[in-house]
Image (cartoon, rainbow, N blue to C red):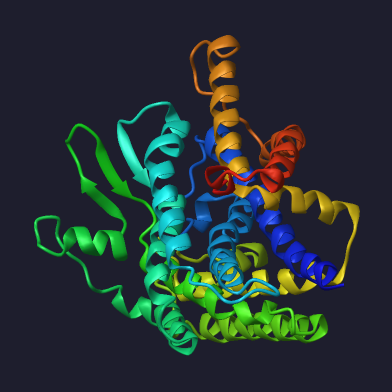
Length: 379
């Protein structure tokens, strides 16, 4: 009975992780086939079609939810069901360093088949956040929660602080809060695309939330708490955003159409993620986490497969996109970049790729469960 309860608890986490992986696939298809319609951060409402805006907005869910679940999973590792608690420090350090290694090698190469510029993106941010959590996990959990909330709610106060690239604190601040180049005009230029400070707050919050998934907590109680927290975050967002008082550098404005006004209201800064961005994405994430635990159907079982081998799916889908796009460029488009004209085409491509990638992901997930290799477990 305990194993069954554990499976139900963990299944919801894998289902949500699989859900955001598929959304991420759509966004990465966009980055390959919609380069002629680039989106800024935040997006420029007057220049962004509503279908493109909401496709990009949906993708905003991916990084915050994945980082939050990483912290939650670290707590579950540290507190295995039916076994004594154990330190997560070594686990987090090794995985964090492994993710950074993947970012600067396999993942960077997968974007353009070159190393002209080293982009430190979401996997780097997760890896560095895990390393920070490795040290913070040694302090009392209440202080982990306080620190996580303080970072998430307070980091927008740091926005006015900037450093010129000739100043001593520039590199540190670029890694922590302001995206930019660490090195330029070198053999390999290095750019921080994901400043890490807010993501540290998110992973700490995920770890702090771990006891909700203790096997002694009744599912109905956990679901109610998750629902309450998610709704509270979204209500707080409505208040802060509605009054334009704190938490986002770009205020919303009323436009000449309802859809443009809604787009303006939902247009949040991702790099680094503002408080409004995190309230929106994590609020929805907690509601989904509660919902996914209540039901069991075939579609959720499919999502669980993608979520059970996320790093394998992440790396494989990037190389599939690289190869497919490259083949199309040099076989049917005479060396020119392949461009799609409509957003619905991106969704169709993503659906096809998700079906194709389902089978190798499922095979790897099954193999991973049986394998005793520690390296394989990292994927």
